[in-house]
Image 1 (cartoon, rainbow, N blue to C red):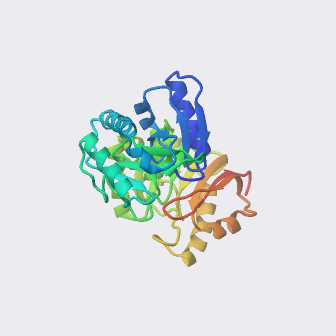
Image 2 (tube, rainbow, N blue to C red; image 1 turned 90 degrees about the horizontal axis):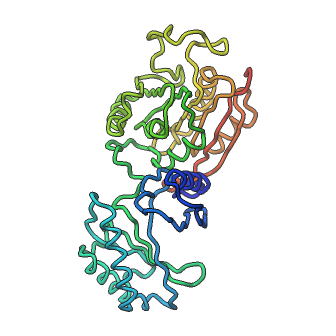
Image 3 (cartoon, helix red, strand yellow; image 1 turned 90 degrees about the vertical axis):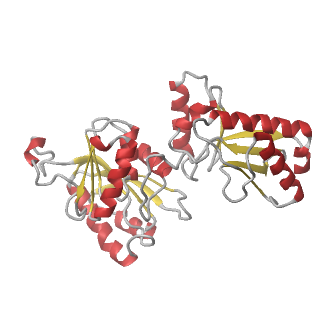
Length: 356
């Protein structure tokens, strides 16, 4: 999982165990992974949405990797890898790839060849999808890990279209949970992009409405394709719109249908706004972002109920901290840094203050 999300992933893991009526879990969380003695069917772990991948782990109390070539160790690993391959069906692995320090050494080559032959897969150093890692554990033992799915869990089947600067789906799922999933929430996603945040919110649970806007028609078309693939398109309203003017894709269209005004303001107000604005690298530029972010916060405040929330993820860390330091409409309720594609963006949950 992405470093910085261990607590959210652990919460999801425990919730999964409760739904499966499993006993209390034995876990060892780290910043970038959770070791768990899972008492149920390991395939159940594939339902996790906030982790990058799931791996099965074998530990060997041996002094050096060469001992892994012992017949007993190889047989243990081959039997375990065959189980991984069978459990992944109907998905299919196409090749085995071994990842380790010194992976080109004679010992590691022999181990990789033995494992590939044992499971009946070709050895593919560059693109093998049965990824096997060999590493030294903290206590000096050697560990062998095998990813249990051909693709990382974060590579969603519904993501049939990508946009520049789009965030990882597992990160989006974690941030949705950080912001809170409440069935009665009206949710807006300005600067929709490929729709990852809004789709993950839709998949996390019911909502009163799910609205998305973007000025880029190609981005909207991409989001619509992804939403259809995820099976949530009918629950979402996506339309062209400038988030510096309005978050509502239905503004001016049957506005009276929403009933009385809320908080004395516009008829349409949101309980939660999810936004991944341009970071100034793959999308946008740093100079324009100064005005864009300031305007976005103001417009979002005008269309969010008092005590509503805004979740913001950005790599414009200094800009965000400056704007939010003493903002009249938004109070910081939670902030953390996470890792995302070589970046370390800031994730902030803001609460709409009275007045402002």
